[in-house]
Amino acid sequence: MKNVLMVTTAMVTPILLWAQTDSIADSFVGILAPKLSLYSAIIIAIVTTIMVFTNARAMKGGIFGVALNYFATGMVFILIGFIVVAFNIFNTGGFTEIANNILFILGYITMALAAHKLSQIAGGK
Image 1 (cartoon, helix red, strand yellow):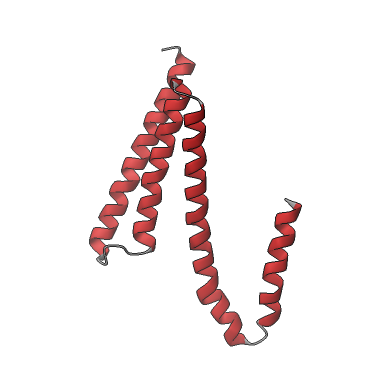
Image 2 (cartoon, one colour):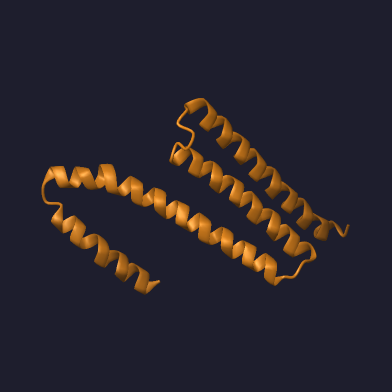
């Protein structure tokens, strides 16, 4: 954690020091920061999904493995929906929103199935 903080500080400090004029600061806040946060969110979502799939495979089946597979599949649906909207893949507002909503619904239904599998353990079914 300490190394991450040091690296982040080392990366951000020169940018902030370089941004002495208003136009450079505005371009950083207006262009770089939104793209950086968007790409960071996508990278974190991909890495997290891969980790969940890997852990599910390491469990070699069973209720926990199946539940983790459902969770990871739901995460993939939600990630694809997020990417569809973020990059405006279909170039039409209406269809993009519909695709996003359908993918989110599929993702949450899949995660609900995972929660149901886990509740089977608690209920002894």
